[in-house]
Structures are given as C-alpha cells and as structure tokens.
Length: 115
Length: 114
Image (cartoon, rainbow over the protein chains, first blue to last red):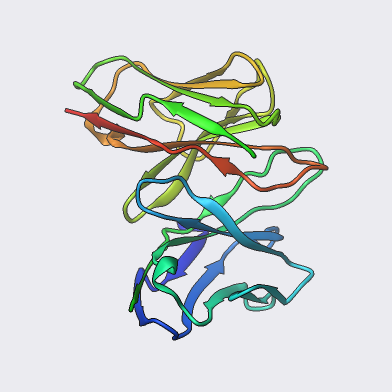
C-alpha cells in the first residue's frame, strides 16, 4: 500500500507556464512534507518543504499548497523554465524529537519544460 | 557545504555474488540512510543509522545488511545478490533533531545483478 501518492507520473509544459504536481498521503501522523528535485545522474536535493501547521509555503517560483483535512498537497512551479526539467518527489514524515527523519517518498513526477 | 560520496558509482555482479556499497559523509551528521530507487516505486528506505554501531531497519530490508563503522561511514552489504536487487542505490545523511531535517544525498551507485 503506497502511503504517499503522486500524480501525474509525467508532465510536459511550455516555458512560462505553471506546472502543478499533486501529492496525497495516508498516514495522519505525517507532519513534515519536503519536495525533492532530482536531475538525471544526480541524487535528489531538497527543493522546498512545509510543515502541517502551515497551508502555504513559497520560495521564489515554487509554492506548496497544503490541505490537512483532505491529506493533499501540491507543488506549483510558476513561470516554468527549461532548467526546471527534472523529477520531483513528494515525501512525508513524522517529525519527532527522538528519531531520525524517516521519509516516505512518492514515485515521483517527471517534468519536462519545453522552450 | 554538505558532502556525501558513494563508491563504486557502477557495479556489475552475478547472481549469488557478494557486494559492498560504501558511503561517506563529511557533514558531521548523526543520521545516515540507504535507499533504493526503482521506476514506479520512487525511493524506498532499506536501512538507516543514528550513529556508529547503530542500525535501524527500513521499509525494504530483505536481502540487505548494513553496518555503520564510524560517524562518517555507512556500508550496505548484499551477501547473495539477486537480479531483483538491480537498482540505483542512494545514501543520504541528516542531523535531526535540533538540526535541519533535510537529507543530503550522494550521487548514487548503479548496481546490476546478472
């Protein structure tokens, strides 16, 4: 049973458009939601994250919208650039003070931005 | 800047072979993780550790052993490799609690089991 679901699996947008990536989760104890960006041949790298006490987090052209009641979140990439072409992973964990950050990842969304 | 290195970067072995994947971090982080990445599955946690000598079981541990010899070094061992273990393996480190929960990933090791 997949605890973190992502859709779509792949997405193509034109340069300048907004890409919308969706994520949902099952475990109501999850309270930390990072998005990781991965370019081919590299390891994932943290892009932006949100905690469940917030409903929105913005960092430049990247914005997370979070709906705790529906257990859904989305990543919006505005003014998409060809350099944003990558795979994006939604992840979730329960932050605690005594354990490591055991992340559960979704399967990823491959984004292609056409110039 | 945080640094996680992995070796080898590519490895080919045969079914039943013995493989050790190495990971070193110079971040002074307490936590280290081993993931496998497969199309259609994303990243799945194999084992993790919160310090030298410590080992915690992840979500897909079967067929894998791990050992954390120092704060810097974390090894993944496949003692009887099988084709189902053909995958891209990533090591990561982080430093919660108190520090950032961000995980820093290495460049990956591509393992092929024939």
